[in-house]
Image 1: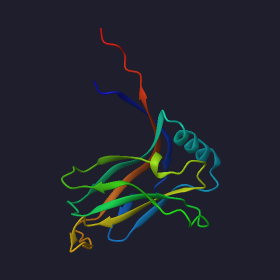
Image 2 (image 1 turned 90 degrees about the horizontal axis):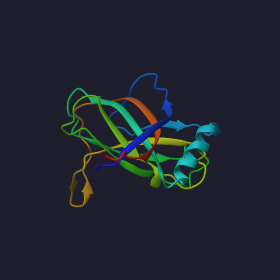
Image 3 (image 1 turned 180 degrees about the vertical axis):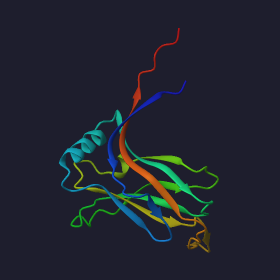
Amino acid sequence: MWPLIAMAQILAVDLPRPLELGQDAAEITLIAPGDTEVRRRVSTIVADPAENLVLQLHSVEADEEPKVSWEVYVASSDEADCGNAPALAGLLSLYGMPRGADFVFPLDSAIVAGEPVGLKVIFRPISGLEVDGEPVPPTFRATVWIGGISLASEAAAAVPESR
């Protein structure tokens, strides 16, 4: 039997229009350095072994298969915090995916313990191909749009006993 997972949204990023992923890296701030309430909540989730902090991408779509993937990184949004390199959270790929797909990336291992100063997500395009050990630059066939971005906590929920 699979465990039930309970998700609770803690932050919905206000996107005035869908975030566009193209041939250049794209980034968006999730938590501003001054947003102490969300920073405190994220810190509590990351410190709790019973909860996971997750990045949710909603309504991800393209007019056609882009033939490119994007590495998804999280990093401090504080310009003074340049000592911390972005951490890879996962890979966004629409190969064979329908329009309007949703993606979830766990962030606990990508965020260092303690209260984050701020948090941003960076999308870097890759082809996923190498020739002689060198990455092949991505060749785009279509732009990808992300309709919504949010942070949520997830935790295993109690499974009722079957009778």
